[in-house]
Length: 118
Image (cartoon, rainbow, N blue to C red; front, top):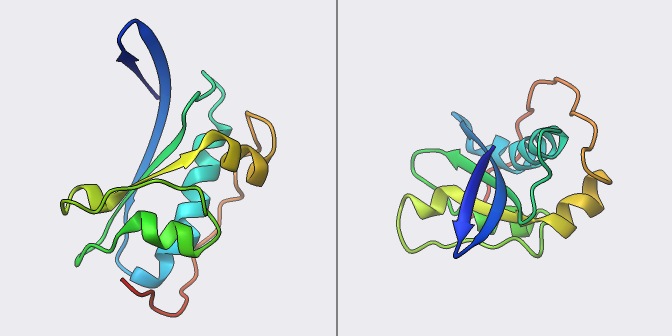
């Protein structure tokens, strides 16, 4: 949970991050981390949820998110570090998980899927 400022406006931001060893886990992990962030009930995020996933070689996490149903996700691929991030807009997160704070996801092992494209 973090607070940022744009001029005099205060913004509430929730960022969740992970490192994975299996690229096939990334799509499911994006959903899991987004739900974890949405369930944090300290302060409602006003811009959405920031997800950061590290993997070597680094895929573009925002592109993976968009290919897996987060069609309004925003991201940048201009640097290796920015490839790790995706912003899931508040409206999209609310649509998927319900009103804030949503339920915490059930603890489960992320299962492998087919490799993703870059």
